[in-house]
Image (cartoon, rainbow, N blue to C red):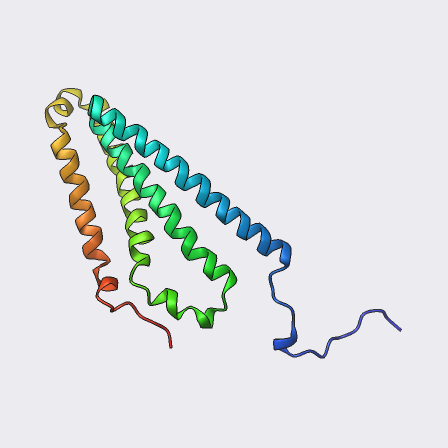
Length: 169
């Protein structure tokens, strides 16, 4: 006779696919990422805002906006992922139907990606066309670019603010 036996349990009686160790690691690492990511991005934001007050440069404006977007994005993504990790998917109507999550998730993530591309283009122009760059670069133009992208992101995610965000039944 073998020591292995076939279980006659139904699907509802089977243990969860996630062990207690996995849940603890996920839970504590998510809170660690929130604490470190949000804290250090806000420190970077304060640093670049302080530098902008003394001697405003376009790169400092981009980096201050990037650190703010990353800090809010870390907070939003972690607050979205934690309930998904520990909640039965059937009970997620409160979260999926919430109109506030696009503010904390999608907009900062899209802004962060856009700012990295914008900083890359800005540095490319500064290196390869230095005389044109000095003429084109201005704090006003930098703020206008950031505000236009923010307006575009708000318009892109507007459907979720109007209550048209799909809620599963």
